[in-house]
Amino acid sequence: MPFERMAIEDWFDEYQFKAEFDIGESGVKWITPGDLGLDLSNIALRYGHHRGSPELREMIASSYEGLNSEHVAVTTGSSEAIFAIIAGLVGPDDEMIIEHPNYPSHYTVAASLGKKSKYFHLQFDKEFSPDLDLLESMITPKTKLVCLTHPNNPTGSVIKAEELRNVIRIVEANDAYLLMDETYRDLSYADPPPPAASMSARAISVTTMSKAYCVPGIRIGWAAVADPSIINLIRAIREQITICNSAIGESIALVILGRKEELLASTRRHIMDNLEMLSSWMEGREELEWVSPLAGVVAFPRLKYKASADGLCQRLIEAYRTFTVPGSVFGMAQHFRIGYGGSIQELEGGLKNLAAALEEMN
Image (tube, rainbow, N blue to C red; front, side, top):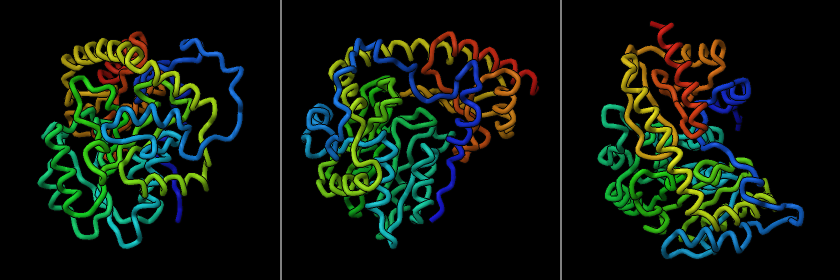
């Protein structure tokens, strides 16, 4: 089974570190151990628990009504959880339904492992809201797994609570599972739906500390699910890949989650200031249209004149040292992704350069 490079990661690898202005990143400005007042000198650099430390799993489980630490598997970011669930749950005769657009590992893992999959498309003209009648029509007796990401990356759309209940109804009625990537749930601008894992034993909630918690470098994520067989499946697969998490990463995660509300409040204030700047800038751009994001730190504008945004993104990096992400890496070439989680100064400079590049194209 061939594993090919992810187009989005290829783009990041090639261009992100060359940029002076990064307005393509999908996370929030990063923090350091010093920002948290951490002394890491006494952490024993030993192997850890295969499902994650009991203390960390207990802290994570407290966010999921009805679940406990036995219902949590801590993983190397959310990517490992996604890989393990797709690899272990979907058999050779099964099918998957994957929301599109989405973080591309959902599709690339399925393709690389030879899993049969169909795309459930979100439409710009419907403000990237999920069409549940369409989803229900796509389900067959072979459907094993439905993969959704909400709040969505790259669009910033959010599934409503009633919509999520209906998705779970559809999944349960067909003896399938829901993999709900909730990476940006803690960066919702209004009250989000409950975590999917709190609503059904057929729903698996996956998230990471890389985005809302500003620490992608610790590589900590998790899956939460009431069905213990899924936790055992994840453990069995990661024992053959990463075995356990970084002792330093888990120690930092414990500190951050212990200060969760304080840190998230500061982050939310920061991103709302940045979103206000981005929204004001978008109002003056006749070449672009967008669906204003409802959560997270990414937006997915598109060019009105129905051309690929690849040339724009290439021009930005080469002439302006400004990093954005072309929509072609998500299979939507007319779009491009803007990230607004960095410093407000970086966003201001990046948008100024983006305006100049757009005017060049006109």
